[in-house]
Length: 311
Length: 262
View 1 (cartoon, each protein chain N blue to C red):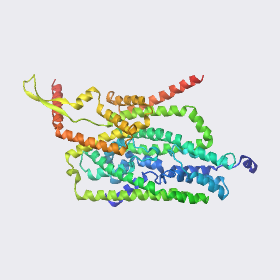
View 2 (cartoon, each protein chain N blue to C red):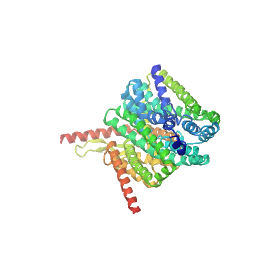
View 3 (cartoon, rainbow over the protein chains, first blue to last red):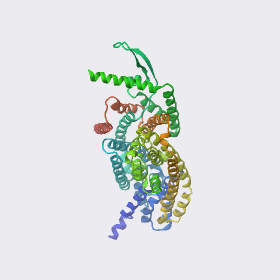
């Protein structure tokens, strides 16, 4: 038994791996700062593994020092990095890998895992799940949506995170590369993005509101009765909506998208601009007496409904 | 709000912020999202109904608020907890659109305080690197949690809990002074409603920036838009249709690649 262990070399115990994962899962964001980003959290996550693999104080110190250096990722999907690094440390402890390799792999993992995590998980899955839960709130009881989200999201993410951690540890860098090279991940990402785009389009249509409160009311001779009655001669929103329903909300969303991505405006600056536009539109509404236009339009609609009912 | 309610809300603001003790998955990405946050505030203040009236629009508004590369665009946790509490405390007897307007304003104030506090804790965390260095050089694997989970946590707690208590205390004090709901003029409510409706476009714009990799992707976004405006599909219907499109794309692309290999 001891002979087999010797030939196989050192191996991280399952307990140490689990401890390492939980350390990361719960405390990956505790000490974020500009110097090492998630470095200290990564160091804490690696501590049980280092304790397991190395015997002398010098070896442990060297290992810990390379893991508190700069590291950053989207932590939930990025648990695959922790898995890969655990695998590499194990090889290193058996003399099959060097610290230089571990350090360069860690740096190389930052880019792709953050990109996948941010755009696929945080930018697509979370908004879609939240949208579904909001729909649940609207069609069922209002408390149902948040309750479903509070159960499904953490549990689902925890399972995914643990699977990715194991995948990284067992498959190593080769496993991740072969997964990325097979095109499967690209395809999955594009499919998710398609889904996200459609949902965001629908959300925009049902939730963004924007209108130009301007109209003209005039007196027109009613041919049937010969009386002068008040009619809406012109209503900006009616004209625009007749052309393409919800045109203004759509244009506004495109405009903000353009400001944010092309002009690099910060969300705070855009918020300020929106506030200014809102004040301006409100001023227009009150100064031009848009309430009258709405009242006349409502009266006309009621009259039309009445005559329809009578007929 | 009584003291216990204030403490509970402030505690949840901390739990829902980045790097709290329950982790980002349960904290920032679950308790910190407006939908669950509004629900929690509703439970604490005993008015889930009102809380959800403002929770849904706030969630739509802030749907695009994610944290790319660690840069916090807007502190969601602060924004929604304060926003929802504000609507419940000040909006007694108001109609839905006015409630949402009040929630938007308080969410703005809360978000600003949260943003400030995040930058503050981001700076305060810097010296922790020296502590981590010291433990690492000693090869002390048993104490690597001290700079991260203990000290980082303590800084995070102080930067969230204390300012939240001050803001909530101020709100409670103000609400006992006068009945603000009746004092708000008509045009302010109108302006807030307009603002809220347009703010949603910001969330959508930020989400688009994640999804749109090439300009022509915007066409697919338009398709989703028209499913609602021309075909009157519900959100659930759109979501299911979108899932079908995703599956069909994935399968057809898989088949295409398989053929290409042959």
